[in-house]
Length: 306
Image (cartoon, rainbow, N blue to C red):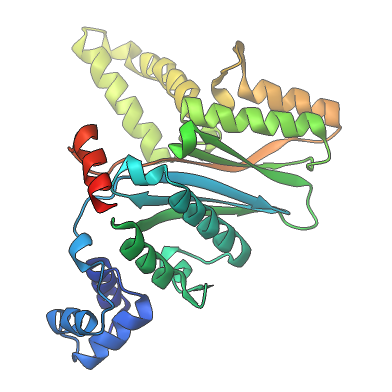
């Protein structure tokens, strides 16, 4: 039977074992998932099997920047107690540094990277056994400035890793102090205001039309005449751009100015156009189911392991 990457991924999620071990187990079991689980358990490679179905929505976001590249990662665990330990913090930093250095295409490829005598996936499995909680590498983003182009990648980590931001700026390098300060302000802006796009031209046409349709229906429902529905929708769309497009947001440090104005002023001072190439914002656990344990129970559980 042909062993597919999806089968390997499913087995890894169930057992926490390394990707190559999962592939070998599926091969040995002739593609039978339960047989592969048993194979891993017999070899002692499924120590995390009981933890694979647990909720891991805590953790930390961390950014590693070196040279002209930077990477933001989110690594999850089950409890905030573990997320605050030095051991977990060290793991998150190691993952960010490795991914930044190697530049894999996705998490699955990242898990196959050599790390500490095995693969990164195997290293995470070892940490599950040591720490005693499910640990998962949820996502990452990596920005790299072309070597021949001026620019920089700037990180910002908020609330001890609960929110992580990475911003890529083009037009001036890290030797320009004013632009560095601006880039840091942009990263803080992304953390605080949570934009979805850099500018209005990045908003997909389908999203624009969907929003206009909603605004027209709202206006019609409030009794406005049909002939002015489009005008009302266009006005509300401007507010949408101001809320969700970074360059059109009010600057958090000076709400009377827009972020786009700051970039234009910085470019004029630097004698070059300063632009935002991209940004990423990770809020730990966003969109995931949360644990319902109370703090006292969490602490008691952790102390009981010690």
